[in-house]
Amino acid sequence: MKRMVSMLRRLRQLCLEGKDTEMSLYGVKLEELGSGLLKSFLEDNYICAGYPGTGDLEKHSREEISSKLAAAGYRGRELEGATHTLDIFVNAMQDGDYVLIADEEWVYLGDLGDYFYDTRHSGPEDSTAHRRGVTWLKSLPLAAVNPAVTELLASESRITAYSGVLPAARMDLWLGNQAGDGGSNAGACSVQVDEATVAHALDVLKAALHSTDVERQERAAVAILQFAR
Image 1 (cartoon, rainbow, N blue to C red):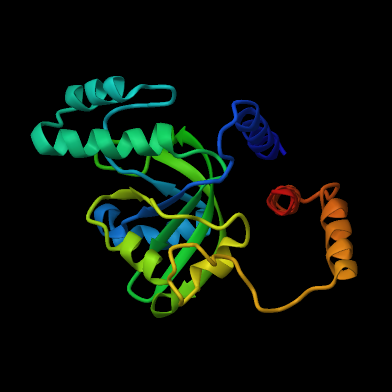
Image 2 (image 1 turned 90 degrees about the vertical axis):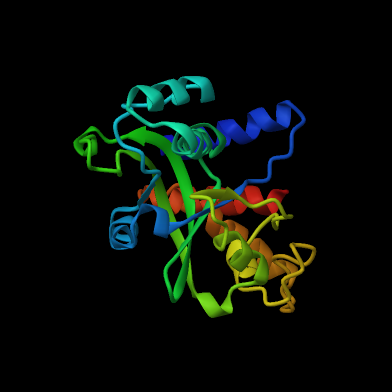
């Protein structure tokens, strides 16, 4: 429930500031973190950024992150890369944004939560302390994703922000859009749905807002907000 309230506050603030309320999408490269972490990511519902030894970086600016990394022994190009990655992970990513990870066969789409530092994994050889919770939404064969997703996941950076146009709703449909039109038809569906069905679906979502299942509440809130755009 706390996460849903945080997301709603963020959307409201963006609207008050006159900013675009569309969420962002990030690709995270598993090869940089270790492919062995995939199972943990999916089962324990999180992703990490790597780079141990800095301590908690919540509310740290890019300059402060760089100083912490330098104090931990990072130098040169490694320091530049680590600063860039952690600044994105800590400051650019937001609760409610989307994330993609992939192995050799599958792509996984998730909904990001807030940054947190897991002190249980803060050892010098453990690269999983910098974390964001993830609600995994969909998996799709790598061969079936649209070209924009393939390009994003092929980036050499550990974390890459998608620069194209994202759909206002149904990211799961866009993910497998073979047209690869960069988002101009993203989320489009050839199936026509009558108004009565739409109204009933909204009633179901509204009822789900009062569910005792927090995850169900969150999903319903997101779906209603996306429909209202």
